[in-house]
Length: 206
Image (cartoon, rainbow, N blue to C red; front, side, top):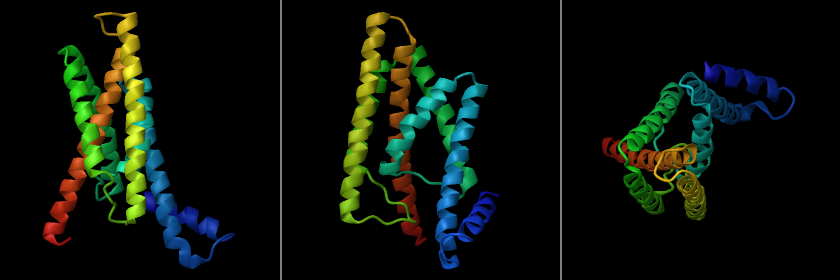
């Protein structure tokens, strides 16, 4: 369905702009855009259904800019990719709530630091559809680390604000801080899963 829609849009655009031999490139790019927008809409919809629309916005604001440069697990079809994307959103919500209920904020911060180390070591993971030069790899790694640290800094500020405003109790600032941490941990997990998938594919000769 997404591919058909992308082909239709490409056919419409190429009537007025580029030659038809470039249609496959345009179709692929438009397909990526449509699939990305669909995933974002599904996450926001899921957030509204569970009465957590703010968290769906935070999820998208954190995971998209970091994953653009770290890379990570990619499903073999657009449908599975969007299912994983929405499922990961639900998992971060559940994991954050679990840590809040069991007073595991310290563990969350430790995992967040470990996730940063994983990104420093393994990012970026190349997509098999797009190879990177050494210069691009270096640039992607730098951007992913800087972006990760910037978002972590926001999380730290939220955590400090929460502790000042409501010492010893849960509040929206502390919850948002831990939720941001859980998303960053997820990014590192997806990176490791992606590496594992790539290695398995190489072993099988795919």
